[in-house]
Image (cartoon, rainbow, N blue to C red; front, side, top):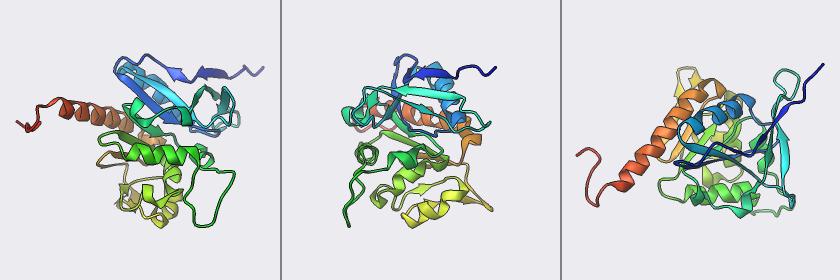
Length: 225
């Protein structure tokens, strides 16, 4: 007998040190989802899942069926149009096909930049000095929806979207005959795939804390003093 999959609330943990917003949709990576929910709350950060809800009060999304069964679900109540990137200590785009779905727009015009709510939100987030933005595996697909988001940025990603990222103007960093496990380019932290999710989360939190430490320094002082 198959048990009913656990449906998680869209907010995990208490915002002791603040919130980390995770952009999500159907077909998200379940390994990343599980590890985000386990790790970030232990570090004092609430995980809040964000999506475009299409005028619904909530939507429930399922993970990739890695075992042939959709084992994880999340019910999201936070509409991306109703929050600001500055509400969060960091923003993460979850991997797998979720971010491809997030760049969907109903109406399109020739020559117009992608206007999907998640793409617009990401553009605003990248303009906030010091706000940490995390991507992992396939999630750079969301950046590829508008080359202004990724052009000239040093990143890593899953091997099967290298062409998308490079065609959008991103500079993919390699390690031998593979893409690098992790790349930090100013406020953008990218990771190759779920196999390095633990390192990605640790670095993401460390970068948030480094930024907060710098913001607390008196004007004119260096963190190396």
